[in-house]
Length: 350
Image: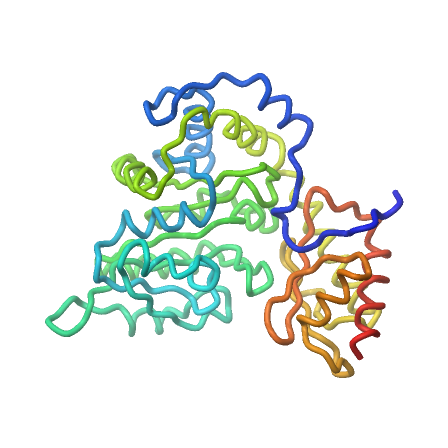
């Protein structure tokens, strides 16, 4: 297949609705979700909860809203939230933890894709006359900034056990948890077994045009529903989008392995070309984080700008970091052309 004029590898959020999703949008039953009678939303929320092994779930327009609703539901103003220093919730949600929930954040190194057990243990704080109590521990799986790295259920469970022993709930930002599951062969309920809430996105690798699911116990979800409304998420005929989510859950999970294979091949070929630097064996899912070669005189922002001129869209992730993400709308036959465009861009900034 001939590569398009623009190869878009900025994110798996750039996917377009599949024909099955467009058909589902046109034919689904809808109601008013604020009144709780949209049948497509009800079906999706039941399906999502079952597939992650939790009691209930709540459809939210975005993953950021779902994460922020979770924080507000678990905490009260003035508490402290522990999260990884490169986590999505800290870096890409506009300070929402402080703005929406009036909580401060204590960040811990997450080089391994999650904070170390000893760091979490040392930084959980009791509420005293001088210190805020720790209200929530947040984890991320797969980890975006760490190259789609997977945290094992064992590591999640160990961290959750420690937090629960100190009466601290645990939220898992599982935006790409189905990527983790497919890549590892581990069922999602195993990742969710010991956490108190879990968010996953329908609008990334699962290719829905919008929507994320917040999952947890029934009482938690009922409380979360009120926060969603407070944050502006009172939904009416949301079934037209929930219908796409149902297609995502039923048709788009198994094919995630194709994205993972494409990412590894992309990483291998770009590495061999010398355009960018990566260890292909480090690619676990669909995210590739590259560094610039030593010969580059520009930075990653320059590379991204020049790559766009060459017809390759990538994401600037830091002074020396470039991200590419494979997805449903990227055809493997375009890999060689993507590599060639990356090579031209690299040569232009060297």
